Image (cartoon, rainbow, N blue to C red; front, side, top):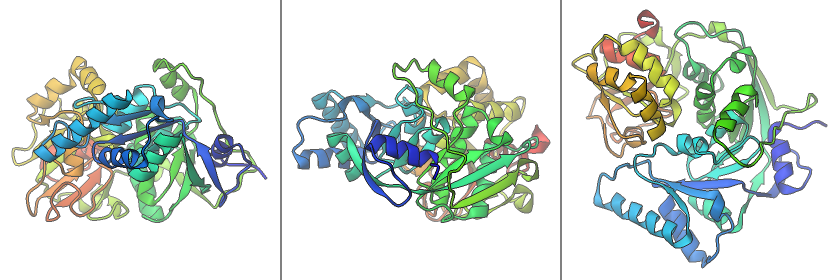
Length: 418
């Protein structure tokens, strides 16, 4: 019987011939924590009495969820992370570096074929470049850091094919929202997802990162996109000394579900409160007034996303009744956006550009909505209280839809601005 990608990667990292449902101890290529989870990782390492870390050179911490610190308690956590890093000689991406799911791969820590663990649920993002990456709890991450290994149950795999061409004004975010709306929040629980088709091949790396980032919102353990020339070129730019290992599913691989979609059928989408699978076409709720718009996060804070925003905001102003917050996903992206003139356009349009990080998305600071306020966000989650106030409502959409809506003051189909 042939194997899927996840079966091949876990088999290679365990030294065993694995099939779905098997349990195995596997070598971990890279792992990390962020400032919302690293304090527990540190406490677990101390409790274990570990003096030498097996994954010392394959681990980092990222300060992104509260960057810079909004209060004394968070400042203490940041100080604890820096002290731990100094003690063990570890890498810390400090305030302003950006969101972990942009920084970790962009800084050359991940390759196709790697097995990566992160103490953050959206670690599945790196499937965009063919890595098996998944989120775990802080205790599991501490075990991986201490031993260089962790245990896994081999998941079944769903195959998704998207052919055709995405229409004008429709983006990767719309596509993944549409798929999540179809499969449901539990439609891929503890399963891997493999994406194929002409529409997938035509996506940029930024678009693939967006889609891979959100598979956890339908319960998936991880995702995989084809490792093509776009991926290999991107990896080469990172000057990684290790060589990538490209895994492809066998033609005889068995899937628990196969889904096919026509990209041409998809229109701009929006997820309504308070679940990500509560998805409808934008036209069905067009005209709904909003109070805040947010562009950024590990889902949609990359250069492609900022470019779309620039196209829409160029020569326009944000609606005076709207707070529009923009957070580049990393310092590198921020600098590139500056060179291209995007940031100047945003500021002239009267949007607010903030430090790269997660603040508004996770509700720690820099944009917490008031009671009854409606937010349209490019983030990956719209759970009640996600942005810091359970009395507000969060809608999710593509950068284009968010920017068009920030201009009009209400949820708007972006195609009229493009």
